[in-house]
Amino acid sequence: MPIRPDVLDLLREIVGADGVIADSARMIAYECDGFPIARGRGEAVVFPTCTGQTVSTVKLLAKHGIPIVPRGSGTGLTGGCVAFGDGVILCTSRMKRILEVDLPNRCACVEAGVLNKSLTDHVNRLPGGRRLHFSPDPSSLSASTLGGNAATNAGGIHTLKYGVTVNHILGMEQVTAEGEVITTRGSARTDGLGPDLPGLLCGSEGTLGIITKLWVRLTPKPAALRTAVAVFTDPLDACRTVAQIIEAGLIPAAMEMMDGKMVQVVEQTFGFGFPSDAAALLLIELDGVEAALDEQMDRVVDIACANHAQDVQRSADPQRREELWSVRKRAFGAIGRISPSYCTQDACVPRSKLPGVLENVMRIGAEFGLTITNVFHAGDGNVHPILLFDEHDPQQVANTMRASHAILRYCVSVGGTITGEHGVGVEKLDMMPVMFDADTLEAFEAIRRTFDTEERLNPGKLIPSDKLQIDLTQPLQPNTPGGAL
Ligand SMILES: Cc1cc2nc3c(=O)[nH]c(=O)nc-3n(C[C@H](O)[C@H](O)[C@H](O)COP(=O)(O)OP(=O)(O)OC[C@H]3O[C@@H](n4cnc5c(N)ncnc54)[C@H](O)[C@@H]3O)c2cc1C
Image (cartoon, rainbow, N blue to C red):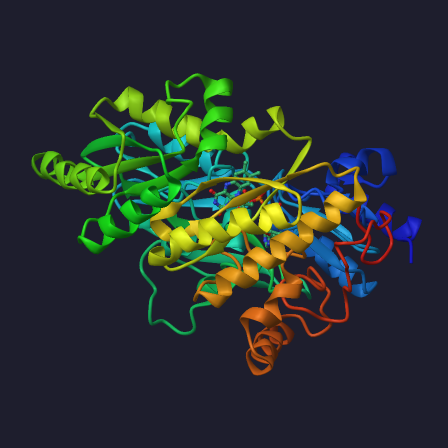
């Protein structure tokens, strides 16, 4: 049912006239996220500037039984922040104040719409703040919000050693589906002090509450660093190298892999100096105490060479390291050179299974007539097959979804999971019963009902339910329940 004009007027009274978008032309920008297959429009987008406005917005929408879809920057890769059918998008992009930075105690309090990179940039500009950073570094860090990072429990290049977002959250303020404010304060450790609500909220994808504030850890930057780029003529050798480095007891700060196609695209776009005829590259970073690093890097190089690395280039130059990770983080953006659309898949597998997974990903791509390229967090076993397609071709869209699900099923069959860091959203809803049995899904549903009895917060996302039935292999129309493309 379309939102009533008087409700829109009341929303404007809460957040100001410029804080509500309800005309279909301007709402196009909110029609999808980084997963272009699922599209829907909802009824309006509302932009509160603070917790108080969020509370009033939520209470008004609750009174009228209107679903709410929380949204940060919309960089998600699973359609999680997209509104299907009726519902209002509550966007945190105007809640971007850094409320407190406590350097001696290495923590900060921020509003949910603060961008990940903005926090570290801000801290680094403070006297004495240069040596600290917010450690979780998704490749989207210059665009994605800290609220979105928490809601998806985002990982990143340095997750291998430093963990995912939840490991860096000390406390949270959330607004419930009824408009109550729950605060689990945390400028210090609160572990063991009652249930771990921030832990539950991390990865809940907007279904358990709207995160409005976060207390986060600030981590010292490493004292010394080494990077290496190892070149392989066979991607499977690169995969074996990854597994053996970890097996040897080394924990690199990051260990990323690009296959040959991705190396070519990245090199054509950024000209970093990668050998464009490589079949695979490993980008490895070691950090820690200066005196130990060269010896550790010798061991890494030995393992790479034992696995037929053609070349290994080592560097201790901080500038070169910055450039390396900057290029890696922009790799997805370079794909526009070779394909009109792409779908970034995301699964986690035991590292020892990586060679078989990579082989099967390519086999599945060929089976569905799709080109797939890979750039991923290899050290975590977090694969990101990138399926290239044209979203205007319904057959290619259908094949992209079928191939994606075949890949995920294969990953689960070797002991993996259906997501490593991007979450479920709508894109992986069909895969939840592949990963979890009925009792487990029922337990998830019970948790959801505890926070949101009517399932009005991001309805139908994350946990399959009758609130959202969507077949992403079919071309669908915007603004119909379960609508897409
Ligand atoms: C180029 C590119 C690179 C990426 N690299 C990575 C990577 O390395 N690692 C990684 O983990 N992800 C990565 N992502 C995915 C994405 O950036 C992350 O999932 C990110 O955390 C989403 O943040 P956002 O602010 O854009 O959230 P959105 O996309 O707006 O929302 C994502 C989900 O969080 C919910 N949500 C958002 N804000 C709130 C809030 N305040 N309260 C409650 N729920 C909320 C939404 O409802 C939705 O379910 C990448 C995406 C792109 C486009």
